[in-house]
Length: 260
Image (cartoon, rainbow, N blue to C red; front, side, top):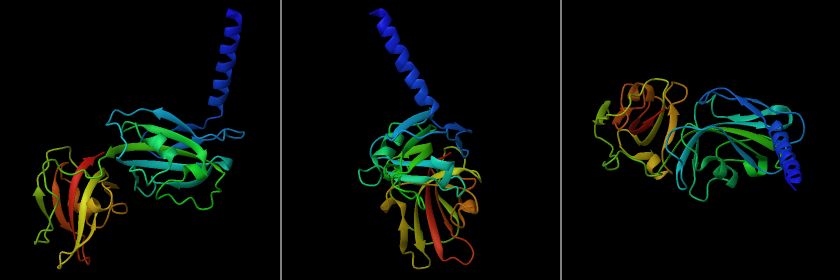
């Protein structure tokens, strides 16, 4: 009987190793666009989630707005379908029971910020919000690698502060000082914000009304006009108001929730 159990254990181990051999190999540091090497052969048809590395930040929970960078590849031919790294605009996934597939929930909920997670699933089960997959067939197997930036409550705001009002002065100024980590050009900032027309002060956009925080890389091609000048040098916890830039009749009021 002992020999029989050893033989069964050896078979299960061999099967597990064979399954691992069929997994893509992902290289690169968290936060950098991953390099994905897909093995030969056909993939399993059952969705599979693999934690590639574990971060040390807050753990995401149901109901969170999860912000993550993601690379999407087709298993066949390692075809690139979509990624958020080039545009420097992380995906925003609202886990309120309506906005995301079960496979994304499995991949992203319960993960600590700073984790890298791989999802392998047919496109019909792996299609996520805000990621156009341009021609992927529903049965085609996709490989998704997520860098989990963090999870935030939909109503995340500056602690102890009311929702922002639109000031009657369009000049850049600090409405509430922050005491957290500094924001620098090139940083990823997690924000809640209000956009108002000027001079009418009519609110035309508000993340508070639209499902929670967003992430922007603070660069001229990734963030809205005027944000680099308006936010660089501020600190987490600040509320700042500033115009959109030359020739634009908009005013932003931004709450800096976090910086990465």
